[in-house]
Image 1 (cartoon, rainbow, N blue to C red):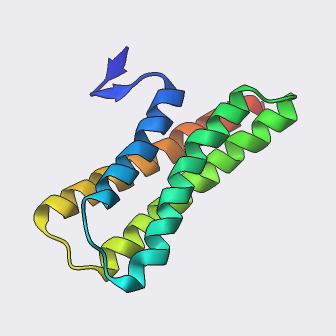
Image 2: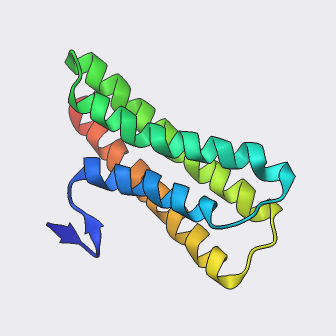
Length: 122
């Protein structure tokens, strides 16, 4: 079940986000000043997916909630790194569209995870 081409299954969606980040950065050369930022966004995007899996397998409600909070933090961090890389590198129109899509997905994941956290703490 998909909405607007995005997986309905959040585990799959977080995986696709991490995969999209990796595929995007793999196909371009970046200024050396951005290498650390590229490494960071690759790590944080993967952490969103990994912590989502951990949250679903949580040992307790508190453990799951902690992992969901980590997911949200890492999604927000991914957005930061993406913005920094975009702002410090010359990008063409295609790259700009890809950055926009990745930043949008990071933002949507933050909102979804915030809703999950809010519902679990009621």
